[in-house]
Amino acid sequence: MSSGIYSGFSDVAKQALLQPQESMLEVKAKKNKLYIGIPKEISFQENRIALTPLSVALLINNGHEVMLESNAGQAANFSDRDYNDQGAQIVYDTKAVYQADIILKIAPPTLQEIELMKYNQILISTLQISTIKPECLQALIAKKITALSFEHLRDEGGSLAVVRAMSEIVGATSILVAAEYLSNVFDGKGLMLGGITGVPPTEIVILGAGTVGEYAARTAISLGAQVKVFDPSIYKLRRLQNNIGTRIFTSVVQPIVLEKAITTCDVAIGAIRAEDGRSPCIVSETTVSHMKPNSVIIDVSIDQGGCFETSQVTNHTHPVFRKYDVIHYCVPNIASRVARTATYALTNIFTPILLDIGENGGLKNVVWQKAGVRNAVYIYQGHLTNKHIGERFNIPCKDLDLLIVSHH
Image (cartoon, rainbow, N blue to C red; front, side, top):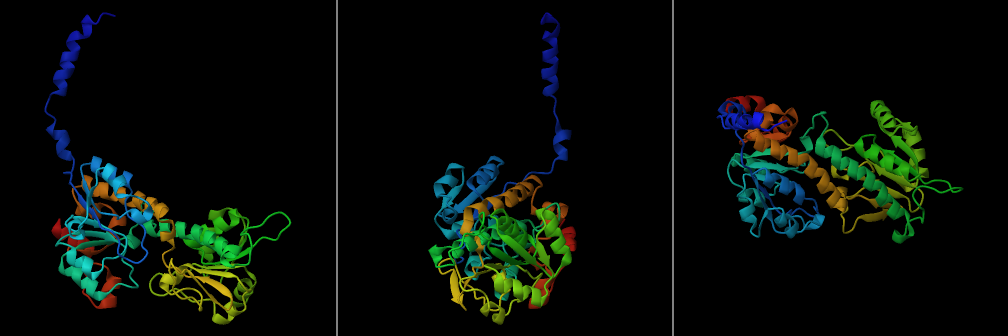
């Protein structure tokens, strides 16, 4: 086939490509360039960071700027150099980080940190509703901040994205922590978690059939332990049973059955969460006093007060105490034990949201389009929009949908 026939065709094609194409470009929303600041966490033993270096690279390739306070990722084993190599700007002055338009951090900001923030900034962090101080709220409102909380962020399926990811990590990790404290290394019983041929398996009681309970049960079963799960909700027990795919011992919370299980088990894990407020304390001090010597209690719900009457908050430096010769592990921030894994889980959630904010011309449009992100907003341009917080601190609350429409 001679190329002569087509020689004129390529010129026509070139001409067509050079035609102005305004109509196609008009339809697309105006892209926004984001300035994202990541300060170093000052909260005690908070080792996580919200973005990995590769996520930073992805944001920078999409035309955004990321500013990172020096050593912000160090506790999760990401060095300044890792971030710098991917194009992040490393700054040594905390104040400089807070000049960004979007502040992305893990722990809720302290009053000192809020002082460094500028007017009309966007803050994405945890809210920790049980420990929030009214003066911090007022300071955010005064600066007309738009604040989003990790805890209320929902994914497309309607589940709480960050809470679920962290719960999966905490559930699995709690069993691995239990395995450590059952061993001789920490003066435990000297038991291997699980079992081998001819030796009875260790018994684990899990209180709570939510995500933490489910992942604790999965990990314990895969290690060969015998698992019993208690929860007040028959629906949650059924869901856990179906998700795990094997039949395990499940029971609603009946005091006599629960007491027998707790006093004969090797490990008890407390993972019952309250919707808001304090988690229910369902194991009495008397029951704990009847547990076998060197048994292990891991109270995952300690950040909400705990499921065991004997629980008291501990930390990663001094994680355990003994009471009635039972080892208690009550660290509220278990995910920081595995900060790098937790960081990968967080970055998978936040990077798409930040890219969306850039693509759709700002946070307002994303909040308008995505119910899951809208759910996380608790202050919008200085107006409180979360009615639980409003009722608790007696601060007037506004309807977010109406605020967005009026600013649209």
